[in-house]
Length: 326
Ligand code: AVJ
Image 1: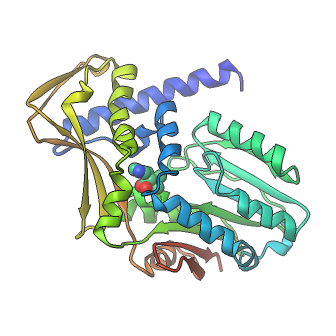
Image 2: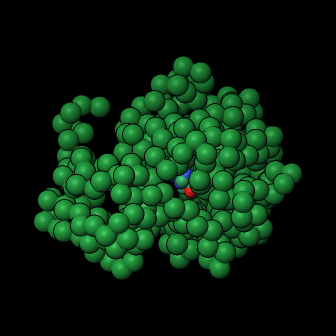
């Protein structure tokens, strides 16, 4: 990628950051959208989170994909030539096991990773080219929450869209439905959507996943303030905020907050904005919805898919569910 391509994108991102921060920090209660976590440092923190003993999500989902990749692909109807699209592909680490199984079942597979991060896509392309040369990679720099365009597929090809990692859990239920309906509208008869969701479970396990003793998740949460200091010239004092995690049982979601440790004012020059925080007041930075069993099927149905199969782990901690376009 050349600098001419990258710079306008960076400008657009900065405008989006500014708009989102103004909206969130002038609202009551204060909030910031979770996509702000993923600057370069934040993406590295997230990669570290996925390797923490208490963050079971990645490990358990990878286990499900590894155990059932053949049956997942068979249900998705891969014998006709499969194009695997992945929304929010990132480093595509978990996807490899599925791609591997796909090349074992058929000679050619097209993989279309979609991500907002050019660096993540470049890394994904490189490692797949190196380790799985049979896979044809067609990367897409795209914010799938704003736009969604797929390459035109051949008449005999099927598309399998992967939306794994419980990324859908970051959205409010109505937003999630909206997003999946939009995905559905881009697909044809026979195409599928594979949805990975984290399931509701005991509170201690959930809290530990988001409040690890290694404090990586705390660093990930606080890093959003570092980002605002750098990109908007803000003067957040990181020592004046604490990482807080709540299990909101009624809403079935984990919430992450940054709690102000004192009465304080913060100046954000790029927004010409001064905000005040009372001691104990929080900035709500993330929701991570946990699904009931059968919840993914219900969401897929509401979005216009027919749920055809679901795979889980022995403890029922995570589910991977396939919906098909009839
Ligand atoms: C990437 C949205 C699935 O909600 O578990 C990890 C992000 N936040 N630790 C999640 C996250 C704190 C993660 N998702």
